[in-house]
Amino acid sequence: MAKIILGCLLGAYLIWTWFPIVWMLMSALKTEQNMFSFPPKFIFAPTWNNYRVMFGQLGIGKYLCNSLIVAFTSTTIALLLGSLGGFALARGKIAAKKQIAFWIISTRMVPIAAVILPLYMIFRVFRVLNTLPALVFAHVSFNLPFAIWLMNGFFKEIPISIEEAAMADGCNKLQVFYYVALPIVLPGLLVTAILSMMFSWNDYAFASLFTGAESQTLPVIAARLITQYGIAWGQVMSMESFIFLPILAAGILIHKYLVRGLTMGAIK
Image 1 (tube, one colour):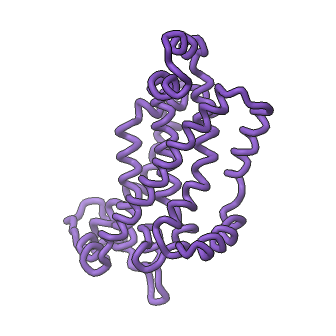
Image 2 (tube, rainbow, N blue to C red):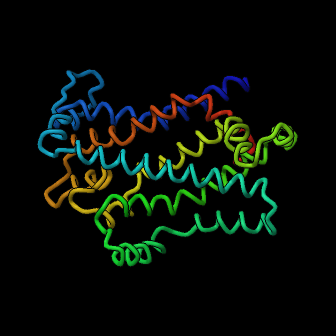
């Protein structure tokens, strides 16, 4: 009986979480008439017209490239600095490490609205407003504390005896980090990368303020489809599928590392 109830709850949860996604993907392949027909049509002739409009009239190719550049660049920088910072916190002889670690993650808790104005002033002084580097810097400023905090937890899970053995064989601290510690925490590194990329890929607040006509990203362009004359639902659904599917694909590709990473004790 308990298994039946558990199965029903699990089925209801899967329907609750996946139905909006399936509906979005189906709507992207429907005509406007089929999208709002009642009763809803689950069997229909798919059309790629919404995607043709996206790439033809809207020209989202360059905005897709902008999103990819910003997400990969900011994630790479956050991973590089975050893994070094996390390793230093985990293994370095630093006073008040717990307090420093908490202070670092507390900066991630600051609402985006509180940092937008200072970042805007900084970018204006350095004349990088409306450029991709400004958006990359903004994303790194938000992802880096999170990356340091997570990687600090992952590095703490490594038995210190492994690193001591490597040092006894002649490795210095940097070699221990690169050749010993980093390969062991690879699942944690991938988890941190996916979570950082999700924030950067989905960000609208920073992207709408710090980018110009040529440097806008997909979430900003998706918002432009909601106008005073109505909402282009077909293009909105097809655009959302482009925003959602890459993250889903990345999660599926590294799902076994996600499970290992999330069970390493870094996220508690």
